[in-house]
Length: 298
Image 1: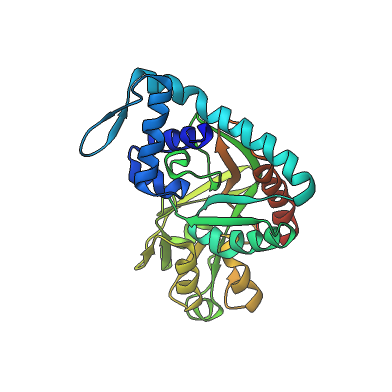
Image 2: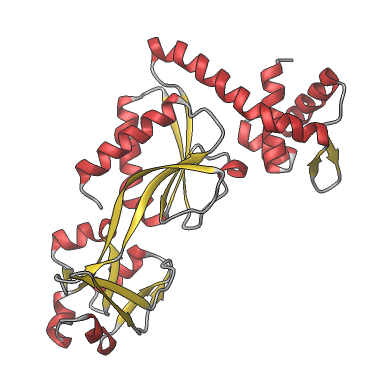
């Protein structure tokens, strides 16, 4: 058996905690994953896992190996990729995580544009509004909105996402337009529960901060759903600009309180610390920087 296959099976099993999950991650059978790990243990002459009926746990020897094996495999992959990509271009799979609405409105299209330039690549895009564990999910790159405090991650800032207050022309005709943040307490507001404080809307003007506690009949955990409800005339919504572009262009929503600046949140590309970033992932990040700038989605 090939030592690199054995090491890949070991790392995947260690990070996922089971042979079944590891097999799904590396694309082989459960039986073969277990066989690879057993052969690696025989080769090294030590037990790497303590096995139970429910899960596997690392032995001290397994912990030592896990501290070094991922970087070794990354270096090997990077070296082989540099040799092969020089003549054939990038190959293999890139696994990406992104927030649901941003993934639907921009990341999917961006990956399509990147794929057109790199026909040897395949992509696994997973949309989730939580901060997924990159290691256990086998994610190469995540697009994240807001700051992450995880020390195991490195990040590259892609820009600042601005939030805008909008309403439909029909709603404004029926209820009038708010002129100041405090006017919002008299309006039906649509709450996006993906925000850290959905009812607390914050604005800035001339260095001064205004905070208002809003109320409304609708609360949803999707910026896209909030935008659709607002376009239907059911209230005012406070949404990231990337979720509003189509509605603003169509005229189904219009900005209100233009002189007040909404909150902004950092958009970053994040990846695991302590590993050599594969060239294909590095290329995707560079592409994302330019693609987001040209698309003017932030």
